[in-house]
Image: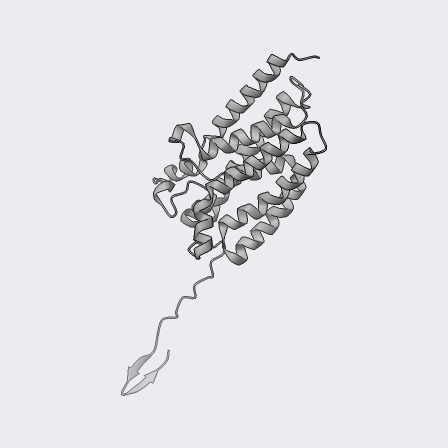
Length: 238
């Protein structure tokens, strides 16, 4: 089926706009409000996974991460379905629909119109995009990133460890296709968006003031109660 150019443009616009508004959904704020607070008023003030981990612990932190990752996965799949090799319109633009949807979702997360353009930092949503584009590389770098986080407790650097290799591999893969130039620009722009959103963290890292994320706190040993008593100047232990 041959699709006219205006229809291709319309599909691209719909995918971009829809993905942007999916990115506007801030799961950290929604979850924190269910707890009776606003995550923007806690910790670092950033409505994202790392601040949720620091403020509410592993369970709600991981829940935020999963939901934010899905904000990258779902739009990419819909973009592929409508603009690429999916079963609906099949516009023949291969993975371009995934790139358009991905960067739109990330932009919507960082600059949401529903929050006066003050959102999160986009790392988890980019992980979702990477998981769709390069699942094996993303899973490998995610495992390495978690190990790095446990050892160093530096959350912002962990985010870039996870997303850098998958985006680079996807860029190399895309360079072999006719849309290689467009893909490279979009993927690089996605990386720059998150880097700019983390500029305060980079500044804090440089000066050693970056907040730490402790996933596994050491168990506190409760002191045993002193059961001894004094009897005629002798201390008798029970």
